[in-house]
Length: 245
Image (tube, rainbow, N blue to C red; front, side, top):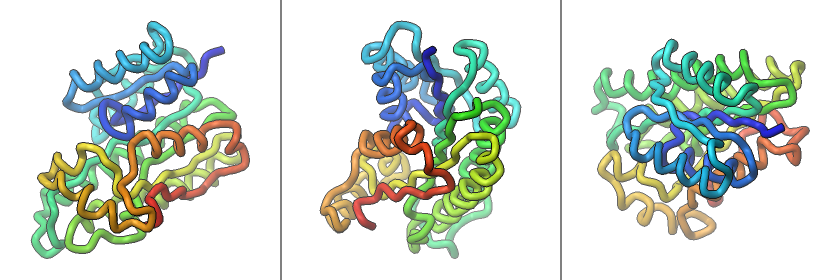
């Protein structure tokens, strides 16, 4: 029977690369988007080209809204049946700033999406993922670096995702569900340009021990491994995909 994966924030970047990889491996893929329908449709089309017709669909979902999250999971089950894996990927970052200069509205926006949103998605995953399945939360190496002078609010929100991963892995382990996180470093996606710093990749990437920024496909491969049977005894782990940062 074909397995099914649900991916939040699947229209671009790491989420899109992950969707296409799983489709290529023969999975059904459900992705969410919050605003860019065109990118979501493009990702679904790529999934069908590398997979098979009808193996992918996209639904608008605001992870900050409980009803929206519940509806996305319900629509996925209605379309494909049981959900075997979830990638908890939706997240945002705000423009570069020191903490002293940040407004409460800015911090609330980051925490509402990256913390509340991640917890709502994880809760629904805990309720619906089949025994023997897996959840991967997308954190960030910023959780351990702190992102001083840039995004300490974002870093803190990803620290919460790390804690979520560890705690939920212990709750769901007895049910046969594994929970892990990937912590990407400087990855060449358009998230940097979305906050006015497209040059960040070329500025910081070469300073990594591996001497370059990472690619979304490299993070997707790590996610695939954590969900695959090859990682059957891995849970509660935080996997850095950061070029050594």
